[in-house]
Each structure stands twice: as structure tokens, then as C-alpha cells.
Amino acid sequence: VLVTANAGELGTSGSMLFRSGTTSAGNSGKFDLATGTAVDGTGGRVMLYVGDGSCGVGGEVLIQAGNMYGTSTDAFSGGSLLLRTRLATASSSGTMTLHSANAGILGVSGALNFFTGTTSAGNSGALNIFTGTASKGHAGLIDMYVGSGDSGSAGDISLSGGLTTFKTGSG
Image 1 (cartoon, rainbow, N blue to C red):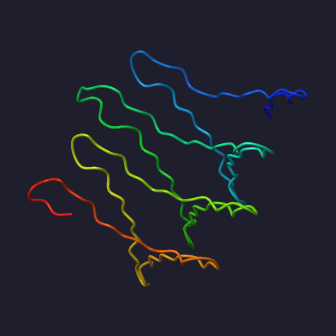
Image 2: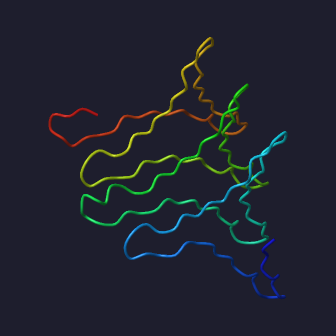
Image 3: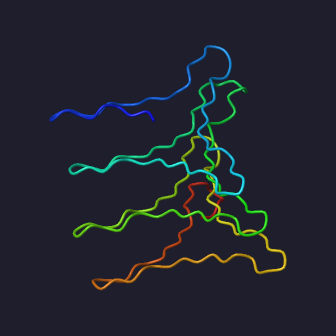
């Protein structure tokens, strides 16, 4: 167990930093955080957790892939981020849920935003939603729902195509 010291009456608790070193030629080191395999049991859990506070804004969990700097053909692209559940050989694969917390007494619940980046030369990234192919069953469903309310207008579902300034293009 690695723990920093608790704060004094007016201070902050200590920080912890785990990282690989830098390099001037070649790849930097790899950092793995993993649990072991279990036989006749459940694999261990990896939990990233930010402690609670009592004023200001809650702490963040930031997972960010690396940038790629350079102008040569060796500078392919920035790092990728993959969130994936795993399979069960005899039953269902794991479920992935992205969920903002419920609001407090006077607030609103948090938004879920999905964006692709902008570009100065070329197409911007696509946003794709797919369900998997099924054998001996139905393909998955794509549902979009707007929650209920008791004040003002009901929520909307809005889909809009982009605009173009190209003379012969369409939006």
C-alpha cells in the first residue's frame, strides 16, 4: 500500500506520480496497471477513484493518449484511446456504461459529449455507432430516448447535417 501523508489543519495531502522516463532517441517506457489471472474465481478489479470534497468542483479523472509532434512521414498520428469490455467464452461479453451522476437539489445532471476534432487540411473524424452481427439471433438495437420532465417543454432529439462552403458540395 502506497499512501501519502494526511494534510495538516490547513494544508493539502501529498501528490503521487508514477511515470516512465523520457528518451531522446526511441520509445519511452511502458506503464502497465493490471491484476492477475484468477483460476476458479473472478479476476481482480482496477479502480480509479477521486476522493470527495466539500467546496469548489469535484476532482477529475483524465485519461489522455499521447501527442505526436513532427512533420516527417514518421509522425503518423496521435495516440489512440480504446475502452473495451472483454468476452466470456460460454456466455455474454461485458457491458459498457457511460453515465453522468444524478443532479443535487438545485443542479442539473452532467452532460455526455462526444466530439471529433477539427482539421485544417482534410476531413474531420467520423462518429460511428454500430451494433454487432448476430449468429442465431437478432442484431443489436440502437435506441435513443429523451427523459421525462414536469416543467417547460419536453426534451428534443435533433440531428443536423453539416454546412459546406464548397461551390459544388451539398450539406
